[in-house]
Image (cartoon, rainbow, N blue to C red; front, side, top):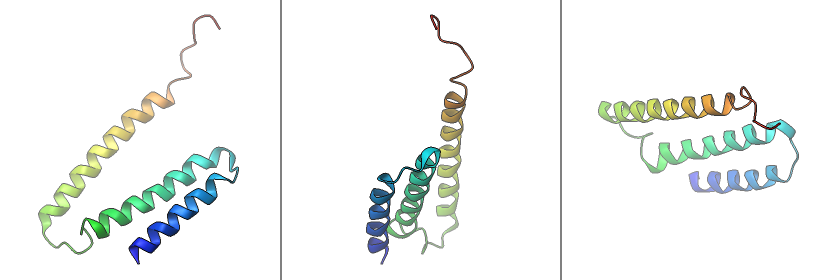
Length: 88
């Protein structure tokens, strides 16, 4: 069922790519990709069934580092318009 859900979400991603959502195109695509990645992590990496506490520590550590990388990337992206481009 998870494989079917991933195939369905892939089809939804392809379908949404043909629709002009304006500024919402990227957030919708990222939301679908996040759902697919969560399904892969939860079921194919057996996080959903795991009961050892250390697994959750490693999962939290991975999410923590991902949020750091995301925050640093967003600071770069968010401040690109602050400085003018010489010659313009």
